Length: 198
Image 1: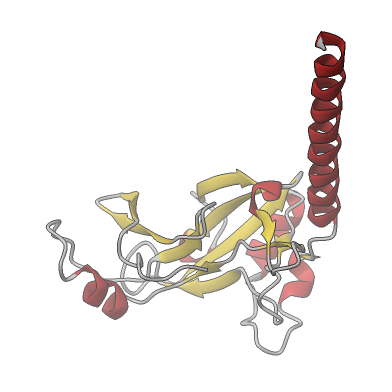
Image 2: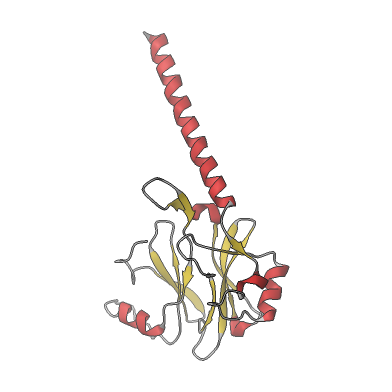
């Protein structure tokens, strides 16, 4: 009887191990297949603003590519806006290096005093994208404007005067959160879009 139980236990452990390896293999394959745009090619898309040459040069020097979410067809995950202060035109780029992505903020569209936030391995964002269990890269960034942020923040106890764009992105559990530059630092606003799930 004990011998039979050992055999059953061994088979169960083996099956779990094989399943785990299969999932890991699928995740690795999906990570390798993520579309990654070279900085110099990003602005070739007719829907994208022209990325400043100094930003392109810096990204290339750092071996950055711009990973693309499965859900958006046009080039995305890089754009200009007012992210640090009102009236200043900055650039934000989701930069992937060695399969680890972080959000880079270029103040006044120059590579001086670059800010980096939200550094997370790309494979963490390889998640199921349909009922069949197919995997895809879900990470993207967006730029909610000050009016939307103020409207969404109305019911909060914390007092913030919104004067510029925020940087929106997904968490690992598919919640949409916003990084907002406030009092010389980025703060995380994680309750503004609780009603939205991706």
